[in-house]
Image 1 (cartoon, rainbow, N blue to C red):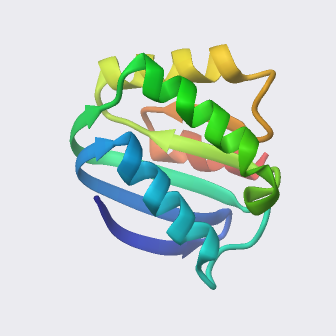
Image 2 (spheres, rainbow, N blue to C red):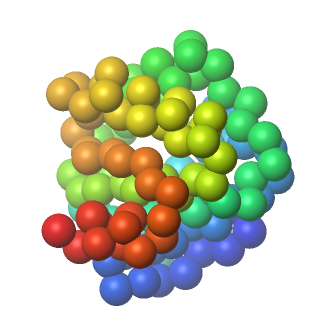
Length: 123
């Protein structure tokens, strides 16, 4: 699912491919925060433009919000930007951020364009 992790000036970019599931996202999140590249509160750009399918239910989205709240000490604050090229997935991501915006310990936004996502991470 993760094809590449690169350091960018705003933090790190995680390129995702293939099918995305809740369990895989949690597993990879843990690998990321445990890696030497990760710094608390750094910006994360989740590049999902090459994902073939998101296998996430609304219950998975709720569990993701709970997971992020429960693991705040590992992640710290910061921002996560999701880069998506599919309108349906972009809408789902925006719905997730709106529902969880006040309760999440991090700022999360979804974007169609990489330059807009990077600009937001810098702000």
